[in-house]
Each structure stands twice: as C-alpha cells, then as structure tokens.
Image (cartoon, rainbow, N blue to C red):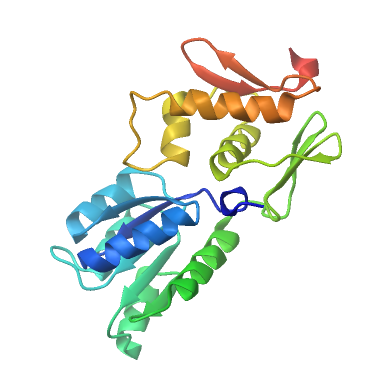
Length: 234
C-alpha cells in the first residue's frame, strides 16, 4: 500500500524561525500526508493559530516577536484547544513547567529525530481525536478512524490521504452541505490554489471508488458544495 493511503491527512501549523529546519520539517510532514502551514515568527504564528483550524501545532520556544510561551498563552486565552507540541533547545525543568502551565501538550528537545517528532504528533492527534475508536458509517460504507480503513459492503476501499480526509469530514457532518472552501481549509494548506478544481477532482475520484456498484452517498449541491446522505433519505 502506498504511503499516502495510510497517512494522516490532517492540517498542521509549524511555527519555527530556523528556515532550514522549517523547510526540512515541512517537506517531511507533507511527504507523510499532512497539510502544513509554516510561519517564522511569533506574531504571525499566533494569528494563524487563532484564525484557522488546525489539528495540531508545532511551536518553537525561541521566536522573533512573541516567544513560544506568549504565543501559547494567546492561543489558550482564545479558548483554542488545539494540541501543541513545543520545541526547545533549552528544555530546562523551569521551561517545561512554564510550557505545561501555559497549556502545552508535549515537549521535544532539540536536536531531535524526525521519527520521534512524527511519533509525538501522532500521539497528540490520537488523544485529541473525537471518538477515535468509533466507526463512522452510511448505508453499507464503514470508515474506521483508528485503523484508517474504509469498507463498502464488506470489501476494502483504498483511498488516498486526501480522499480519506474528505470522506471522514463528510461522514462526521452527514446530512449537512459542506462548501468547497470548508473542505479545502480542512484538507489542504495555505499553498492551496482556491481557483483550481482540485477539490472537485478529488471528490470525483472518491465517488468513483465508493460508489462503484453501490448506491450513491456523496452528492453535489450546485453552487453550495457537497453533502453525504443515506440513500433512504433522498
């Protein structure tokens, strides 16, 4: 199975002023299937964290403008409960205590291995995921968020990371019309071209896979977006 069939397909915010490290982490995380927005200073990072919905935030302590502790305090003051992994070259007991008291979910000392960073992100996402062990279903389609598998009438359906993320989002909002903008913000990052047809193409490919020989579940609402409905409710 290709890597992108099992990747997380979630949106992360990386706040790191070391350009080289930021570029390396961004590339590595995107290769793992994550959508990643990156910013290099505390003020921009705080704004992005408050104004956008992320599944997790990777936050350096030493930043231009607001430092990482101040950014974290601002995020929590706005009642954003997004999981935050703090990066620091110091990692003294005093720093760890301050970070945890400010609302950090985990700490990672520099330098670190990318595999350890990835493992900690996955751990944060598992803890934060709503009802991680509860399968989502519609008609005879079943999506298991824990194992990241999809079946239709008992047969496995292989989806890319983006297709899986869209299907999971539509299942969690079953019966509601979801706009292309909302889907793009959930599945892609800031590099997404709003003028492209990538959302429509991805949904088209998703429907080809889950509708093959079965009742249609994902429907286009002209001028509004997409909705996932049970066949009996049409």
